[in-house]
Amino acid sequence: MSGPGFRFLHASDLHVDQPLEGVADVPEHLVTLFLHARRQAAEAVFEAAIQEAVTVVILSGHVAHIPDADATTLDFLYRQLYRMDAAGIDVYWLDTPQDEVIRWPAALPLPACTRIVDAKDFTRQPLRQGGQVLANLLTLPTSDQGVLTAPTLAADPHRITIAVAHGELPAGKGWSTGVDYWALGGLHACNGLGATPRGGTYCGSPQGASPSEPGPHGCLIVEVDSHGEFHRRFVETDVARWVTVTQELPGGTDQAGLLRVLRERAAQLNSGSRPLLVSWQLSDGDLQRNGSNDGLARHIRQGGGDVELLAALRGEFGGGKPPVWSNSLRVKRPVDLRLNCQEEETVLSDLLQCVQQYDADPERPLDVVLPWNGAGGDEWPELARMREVHDRGGLLRSVATMATDILRGDAVLALPDSIGALDRKRPQ
Image 1 (tube, rainbow, N blue to C red):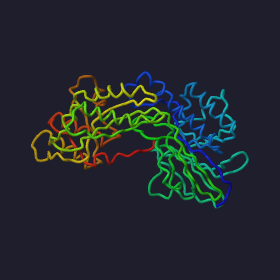
Image 2 (image 1 turned 135 degrees about the vertical axis):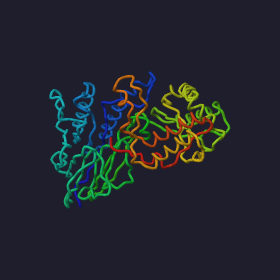
Image 3 (image 1 turned 180 degrees about the horizontal axis):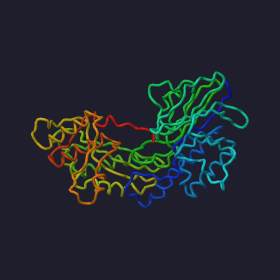
Image 4 (image 1 turned 180 degrees about the vertical axis):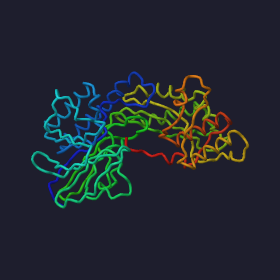
């Protein structure tokens, strides 16, 4: 296949109308960053389009929910789109139910470069730059469960085909047939440049939203050569970066010794140009029943050691330029079961066996209701009932760890690899 070569930018899940989240207490000096980071990252996306001299920008949905957007959000998008128009860059914006661009206010007319692409139905249209047709552009609807649906597609021998959609590609089906590049949205992390374009490309969000989205975020610059081959390059746009740091508890040390280790790690992190938002995960490296680390681990979980360590780290590194702010500090549950409670006739043994039964049967519903004596009204049983568990493995770990701390108190519980292995990241 031969045709005109061109370059486009692929971005999705900008969420410019939303702040960063997942932190209970945001310090005063970081409030502005939390409020505007996603918008600033989106601005970096449009700046990259200009600097990289792309022909087209493809926005694969979840840019902003227009009906609920405030004047500042609308003004921001209005100005960015007119920047693209002034640079001669066409913008294809996938209009998902979480965008509703169709309800853009008439008082702010969108520039001619902006092309709204309906995500409700399967459509095919030419992707143009000026008067030249560069490729076929397909849009695919999603099911209520967020899974993409599409008819069987025939390859176009004369022109490349780009599909833009927001949702999950079903596994094990020949969805690449007839499509040369899947410009997908729905996952906030880029799914890697090693994947073949015909397998589906999630560019990720320009800015991580919460501690659960660590690492670099950005957009993709995609070069299409005259032979129809795709060459992708990741461009970082995040203005703040979530970082998860795992540290083994030093054997035979106390809290002061642990703080010295964490200070060294924090100093190593403090070498970049963007603010870092750090979640510390401490693990008991010896995994033994009465190991030298157990008392320290228990003190951090139950005795306020986490608060003291966080206060020290925040005081030393949280106000720097750029800041390295410690969001949280927790003892991570280890991953091998070394406590043989099966042979004990105790309440703890019974509870751990119950946890293992739930782990062994992932289809067993966690339909748990807390004891209720009738006080507080009829709504209390409903509030206590767990219907939807997004992190089943994490919940089981927490139950087992809390039970061990309360009922035994002399060991750090370690759980099997299988717990948590069932957790899946789905498009958001």
